[in-house]
Amino acid sequence: MKTYQGTKVCSKCQQVKPTVDFRAGHGQCKLCLAEYNRAYYAANREYIRERERVYYASNRAVNRENRKEYYKAQIANLGDVYIRSVICNRTDLKHSDIPDWLVELKREHLKLIRIKGR
Image 1: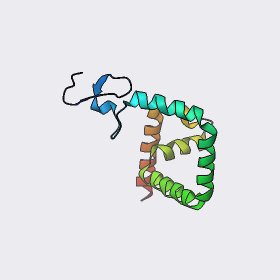
Image 2: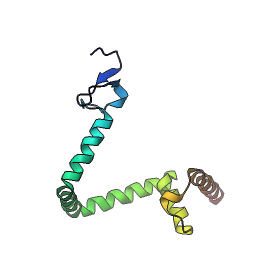
Image 3: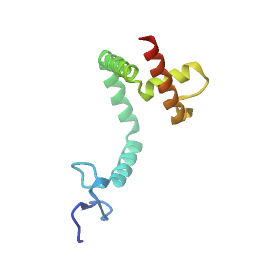
Image 4: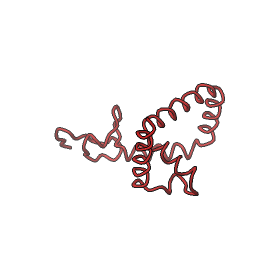
């Protein structure tokens, strides 16, 4: 099978695809890899969930500290997570129900409040 520069052959579906359709170090394209991962998770769901429970239980303090740092950065940078949580706390909306334009509008609103408060 002839390939051109910037293309690669998937080792599973045997299709020639652009290299952007592959993850670094993988011979399978992203679609075939996602299909494999879904099947693996379905077959090993309980094992994976138990392994995650053990990990999170043994690293509880580190995880909590990482979440705090992440959320502080979201607040400082007015990230989407922080903006959506501000909107959720003041309305009955869920994170997934908030449109992007409303997030941008609230971000600009908070920027103005921060400028005014200086």
